[in-house]
Amino acid sequence: MFEIAEYIGTIAFAMSGFFVAVRSRLDFLGTLISVFLTAFGGGIIRDVIVDKTPFAFSYDMPAIMVSFMMLFLILFRFHKRQNIENRAFFILSDSIGLVSFSITGALIALEHNLNFTGVLALAFITAVGGGITRDIIINEVPFVFKTGFYGTIALLVGALMYMLHSLHIEGFYITLAIFVLGVILRVVAYYKKWSIPLI
Image (cartoon, rainbow, N blue to C red; front, top):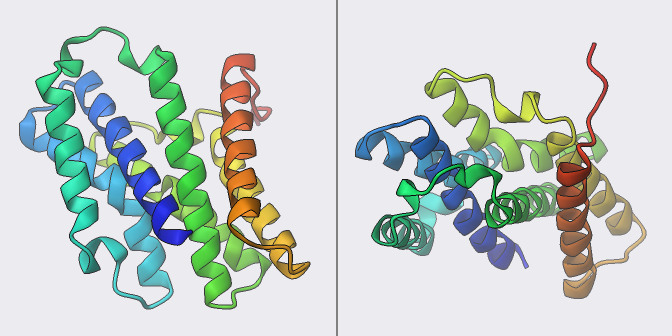
């Protein structure tokens, strides 16, 4: 389950990093950094916290997948399309990445017997850590701090994973159901413009 969610999240967030780089008019190196930070940043922070060699540094497949995804997007000239970040497939891919990485963060936390706070923290960090790092580097207010229900989804997924684990309700289909519900909630929240009240 972990590897499936990790690969799905990596591909989805690689696309997200690419589109953010295009919007910010970065050169090829800047785009490469944006893609890899978005795809791997949160997972690296997560694994360092639990004193584990980062998944992206242990297996070749994640880097290969990201490289092929970036090549695909360039060959089909996605960087020349206008307002790509407002299109449905971008919103869907970003939502898939968010929920997938929330799940992997929660799974790692549960594997290391962390408490409720630890599960929430790793779910959140895995999901948004890469994006926050990317946005800071390109001198933007991190996306998660501007979009009300974005980070909240990661916390909800983490809380649900912890609760079901405590009740010994686990397994592939349970995790799949959480994934589907999380993606639907994120997409609905985006189009309904749900947000957390400003202070």
